[in-house]
Length: 260
Image 1 (spheres, helix red, strand yellow):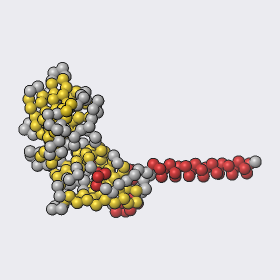
Image 2 (cartoon, rainbow, N blue to C red):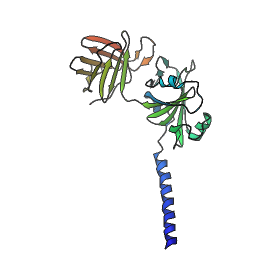
Image 3 (cartoon, rainbow, N blue to C red):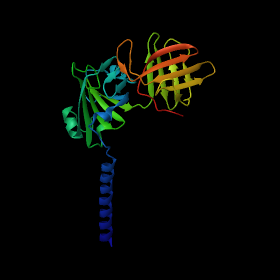
Image 4 (cartoon, one colour):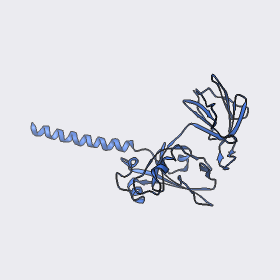
């Protein structure tokens, strides 16, 4: 009986180990080498410094919150943008990627438990891409790593809408939580719940408007290509914000699909 019990225990342990292997295999995300998998807006949320880096921790921290925007025809980060891009995508064993960056197992937490990584290389035909984002290591469809100067920046896909303008500088954010319109050095920071969008005056346009205790806000987003007036960076939409009769014009990301 004791022998039978030990045999059953051994089989049970093997079965448990096999279940763990099967579970890990099924949990591996589907990775794509296609450029379309990158299209969208990505926000820098964290960074990892697994070894010697040319960048200090303070310098790396200053990048958090920046956005890498990738459209069908271009990609941009801050004032840098590329409209004549080249792309190479490949799905690789994670150990090969570790070797390429001279990493040991355990050096980079996001790699742990993974078997493969999709490596995407973006560059400009007419010049070398000068900042982070030229190499992206896709972990799954909502998270990538961007290695640069010895730092691995972690980016998450951001499905919210962002717009910005100049003269004066202003920022607009629309997410499932609501709308926020802010003008630096201006005390009138307007925050509202997410209103129901309406059809705009032009085909495909969307209008959001809301009233708070102190402000009336109306946002018109039109699917027309736009250029930042300072850097020339491309955007997918033209945005007009009216705050209590004062009009602000600028550019925004892809047309939002958000509604309460």
